[in-house]
Image 1: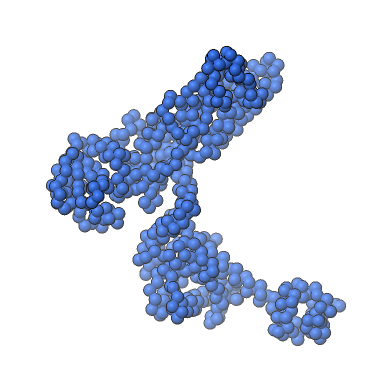
Image 2: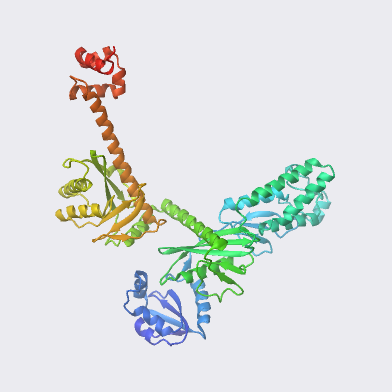
Length: 609
């Protein structure tokens, strides 16, 4: 290994050879923080020290920490790739793409022992046993084990079934034998050869091939029926039914796609999720997902390569299928001999890739939910960072306020303001507004009044102002809010949420002039904006309904001749509803408002009396 002199990093880079090789960045503590490969060491490393808009914030932070550059010269770019991969695994540098797979997936193991047991495990031990999986969840693994135990009777006990132990008659059959779930190898009622054939059937199931077990069950059912053992024949019939049920659970993929491995990649800010689906004999026999830290200068093709290699190392047999289905080609195929990579455009292979991508999205949602539960502050930081980035804001929008108007054909116009802090609703700060200065259905004028009342009051009280204001409307509502803020001399970013016919988030506008911001419907930012929009809409509508209901009640009682506002208030305070006023008897009404008014109320609601 060559080592540059103790000059500044930029000068060290200029002294590097033009040969292919691997470089290492070292910080002040002597820790290697990044490992990279290069076709030309000098050109690649020098590019880090040139001012460029292409450099991400993470790259700039890393470069400031470099005090030393080490390098290794190799014969070819392919050798550089292999060496880089090896060094990253052993050194785990902070700024490289790293696997963050903190989850051990469940496997099914066929133990290497006399009369092998079939069990669940999370530890892959190279002990000669056969391992199948990994399975994406314990539920998926349990369903496979339940099916195996239902169809192929094998022992579940921990007894030492050495020949001498069985010959001595040390054991007795257990309940599982009487239930038909075991054939009693512990007492010599099932030979080792017969048991081995049953294990072979289990292995074929775990490999995704159901044909051998189907043939076996059909033959045994026919033999039992031919020998007039109808109860035994019925048991085999039930096992065949269980087989059909298992096969119908969408495990079967295709009769044309026999063996394949599928990988998909889902980038998400500083991490990415790679999902793996294993298909054998046309059936899905394993699904799992790993999480990667993207490092600096992250390339999706490199991430996919690393994830595939990681999966291969975790596989029990260490082998990929001859065909691997991917969304795009990995950065190199040198690590995967004899494998054909396919990027599908249509058909069943594309369906499989979409299934893998959906599994990755589900896994990401679970991870984010767990993060929110375990560490709400970190989740809020991540969400606020994403909001700031997507909306191009100068600071994190920790305090967001959103406005919405509500009226019915111009009657009872109201408005509402909801407040979100760190991505969560702060309901105690919600506010309702009765529109006071606007006649008729004028949403722009109503918004102008409400925003002015809200922020002129906050300024007068010296209260905290929001980091972002959202209008539940498009560019027009944004313009109105901006006019008010300019009048009040306030500099607060404004965004506009446009809705479709079903009041769902359709478009987001931000900036001045307003620009359409493209958001992925699966992104946390989109979900937060949808939540804000639904919340302000719900709050405005509920207030409007209250107003309409109250107005209807008053309008009905106001129609009674000789009954004024004071009497109406007394009636509603006592009886609560108009329905109870209608059903009250004359004595109750008279005791409350006097006989004269009680008679008018009775005659109005019951003129025939």
